[in-house]
Length: 421
Image (cartoon, rainbow, N blue to C red; front, side, top):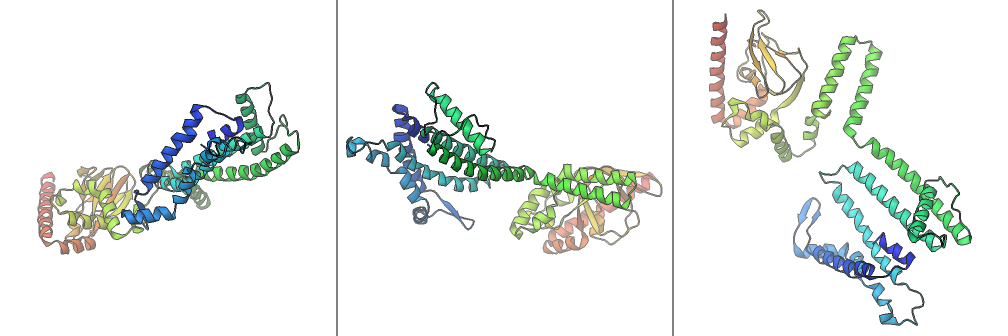
């Protein structure tokens, strides 16, 4: 309607296609939409309202008047059928059909819904809406230019429209080649109005497009800003080249694996119930791979995942060393580590994704009996003994199972070392 309506008004288009579209089709479509709106639930303060009486009351207070105006047949009342041809010297029917353009107000509500959709990038959507509005206003301005008579009789209607649209775009963009100029006072006044609107629209579009393009990927922009600050710091402190490369590789890995996000900061912004649900989704695959947690209840797993803390180690880093007093258990989410003796250089085991180590430290404050070193970039989750004991106190049956498995694993580890000596 926003496109065909002005064209119908300008070119006095008639025929079954326009009659069916602007009359029958749109009337039926708007009527069905109005009837459905009386039964469509809505959100109020984050809750879905499904009560029919509240839905009707809400619709009558909000969009009913706009929808009724767009549905009411003003063009039919102005037709010769009702008022006669003598009383209707000017054909105002196409102009009255433009009243239905008030339904464009629904675009604001639709855009607000799309902003929360998972399948759309909000910045791209805003950019698309801006371009759409610019094209619609250019179309209306081009139709107005044609109404003022700036057309060539030897050109077709399509060519005249294209020339008018070209004039509007060059005027909006403040280019103005001067190949199409106003020829009388109304056209001059109209040109002044279009220029004023065009300057404001052009400036608004350029400012928004620059902002939207900068925010198409906010995470990447923040990452690049962090890298720039890092480079300035490295130059200021005259950091050695080898250490510079290690730091840059670390930030590159953080970007490629996590897009620079700290999941703990995101979880802290959520209520406790959503924290547990999201943490369970993030850590479920890690916990399910750990044998000591097999058979645990869902309640126990939810409490455990809330106590996990992410940690990252670069290749060659020692996660802990032999002889240190242990306080943490580690779960491997990504990467691999080797368990070794620093004294002899012997490697006892290599652990990959789903592996875990250091569980004895959760139950006994004993020195570490081996060192653990990262072979690759490793994403780990740690669980300290204090938080683990708090969870075990809530689940005594599973606490006995954990202690039994820890004693068996400690015994097997000692026997394995004796055999390798």
